[in-house]
Amino acid sequence: MITPYIRLAGIIENNRPHGKMRVAVTLHQAVWIEYRGWWFWSRVKAVYQTISGDNPYAESGIPNT
Image (tube, rainbow, N blue to C red):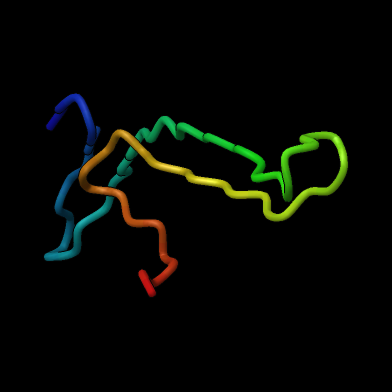
């Protein structure tokens, strides 16, 4: 079986499945900084990061809170 997201190759021998499965995921990362005050070079208030993947079958393993 080959789809844009999953590649599966296998065989069943002696009532047991054997094979390989490949799930390709491209990660997209965005990082931005929030500065404190109007002097943008003075102090950093927070650093934010967002990571998302393009494969709907892959999970991050990190619970959403």
